[in-house]
Image (cartoon, rainbow, N blue to C red; front, side, top):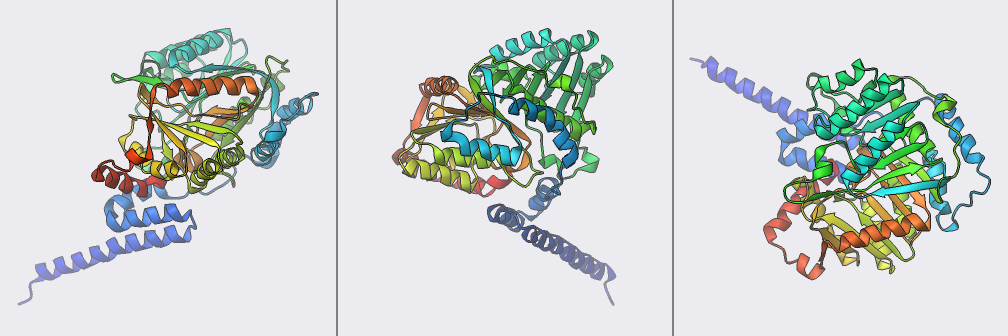
Length: 479
């Protein structure tokens, strides 16, 4: 007599196996045909082979490529750039530094980033000083405030800034705010609703809902931009949250942020208005947002953005050119070090050619997984002569680089795959000795709070630590 229950269960088991392995093999085929970076392709394939269930879930949420389309039509884009271009062309005595003419031209070509002279640069290395300056400048606003942050926390710091924005909106100032939907997932809706009720225009960037989970979760707006009356701008690595001011129980939060006053603010304004078009489908090009500005300082600056929807990896390509073009030194601060092969080779090539390349990372990070991945790359760069330092005083979140007493950059970009390939990022590149020397001194001061990493000691660390780092490194393109 036939055991139909047994037969049914066997058929169900075979059907499940066919669907299960079919989904895995089909996904691998899709990944291969997508013609991605081979390193990233292999990372996904290994994940699917050894952790198939986890791999399928992660690929569905984070791995699928977003169709690379233009955020804005060419005609509208050119219309938006018209005012900054006029201001750029009106510069009578703007002499571009010969040593960085190729880098400036690269950013002009790939990013439409105009170099503006006559800027004043103010540097903040602690959250409290930046917050005080931001609040002071917000209070002075008379026409408009444009603000976007990856994280806008519902804590005393976030509420303090929110209340100032509400007050300014009630005074008749135009206030527009963009926050990243994933960065602010846990922020209650009423936090932003209070701003909307007061007249603040608030938009979330690439909203993601669990019921409609898509690969949008993988493409985040990591930018930190503030523009006040088109004259004052803020850009850097700090978000609006208490931890950026107070740090942790085990140490300070060390970051770098800039205040810009001058024509370079046009670049920040353009970046914000492009993002506003993306979230609101409203193209804002009025001349009142690009006022005529005098010279306030001596810095020549470019505002450079990068995003996953364009044909070029603008900031990554610029860093490669800057590193390989360094003559004397190139110093880097970054909280995460998961470099693309091109950036790692640029650093190694510069160090091997005699350039003093220094890399500063936090000794203790806010994310153990990414920190393990970062450590896996250190032996490679140490072998080439790159000097590595671990910052001990707290968490180093600074994204700052300085080279040859002339070039410096501060922004939101980490040295990792996510910043280079997935996130919407922004950096200010400055070409002047005064700012570069200030950044160099900041780096050297931080270096006094570091412990150096020596290759002979680094290779002796515990085998299980090396194994953990190597495993995480396989996932580096996915982190």
